[in-house]
Length: 144
Image (cartoon, rainbow, N blue to C red):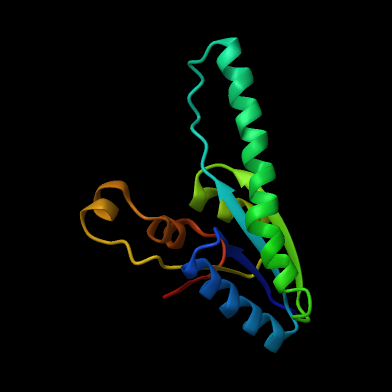
């Protein structure tokens, strides 16, 4: 059975390291990669119809920007890697959405990069990595 690596990707240095890790392991095991970019979106719906329309327009602009500014450059760079790479861009809570996309795509492992934030902020608000490893449907690798 070939491995399928779900990689959380936001264009950061940490995400690039996670992608390198996943590409290397996919090559070694004849696997593939699903590259996932999650845009956080507030679930609040206390808006007027005009505000909702404007919000929908901004949402589409963010999706288009993520496709052209984040995903396309990395896909172009991976074109000759020899690894099958597919992309998914979704809105939602980052860890929950990574879990959902990984499960829906049959991923055997989730890979994310660690950005180094620690201290009071991650204790108060939690971290994506902490939430992910507690709720993931498959093993997780956090790349430093």
